[in-house]
Length: 135
Image 1 (cartoon, rainbow, N blue to C red):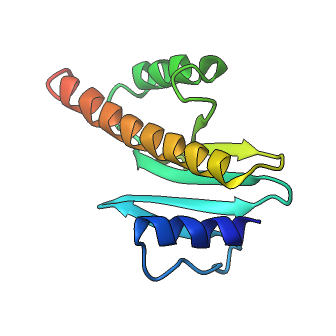
Image 2 (cartoon, rainbow, N blue to C red; image 1 turned 90 degrees about the horizontal axis):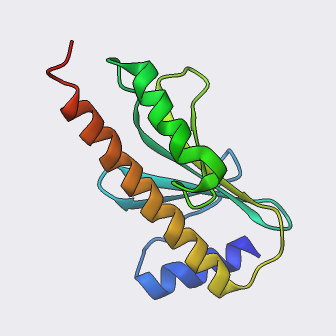
């Protein structure tokens, strides 16, 4: 399922070459400069994952509280989840949809995921800029 959806999406968006399944059994997409997403087939369904940004060093507790509000019931993330990588250095966004879907649902879901990924990248940058002068 996912392979066909990826090929169709790349054809519609003019993405060449079509991403191949990598060693982690994911399809990696480069959406824009510095914005990448990975898709994994859950059979049925899919999982999406992407790096938001490096976790801010200053005022981490305040920042984590802010992120938790976004994560609360998925209200600020569109049902996605903000988390940290295994080294606790990179903020990530992930989404799991363990059910069958058609291509239109796949495309809309992926578009929403990418939009939230970009949104949270901007929010991290704003937070860092606002708190840059605060010690």
